[in-house]
Amino acid sequence: MSEFDNNRRLRVLVVDDEWLVRETLTDVLDEAGFSTRQAMSATEALRQLQRDEAVDVVVTDIEMPGVLDGADLARLLAAQRPEIGVLVVSGRRPRSLPNGARFLAKPFMPEDLLHALSDFTSAPVH
Image (tube, rainbow, N blue to C red; front, side):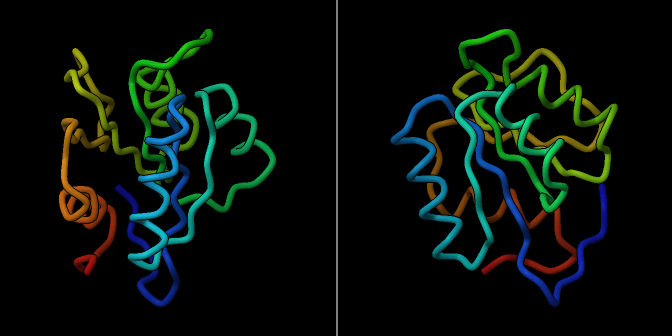
């Protein structure tokens, strides 16, 4: 897990195929002071990460349509971009997670999400 500079906002990429879930997660994170962006698939997330490296943590669902799901995305990031933290949010626990990745079971409260993201910082998130 990377150490992040507390003098800047944590940059989070929210990946979920359901628009309402993406918007809700993004709203919670924006209100808490995070810098956010969105992707509606693992493939789109990887394209964004190839174009722009300014992401500290990826928050991803597991079950998404397409060639890659959220578990695949977590494994690829662990192998290719280990400096990016991964928080997997899902209604079902994945069989395995790569080293450094965290899991948060759906449904959850906004404060649960913020607490889970505090694992990727050296100071608690308020």
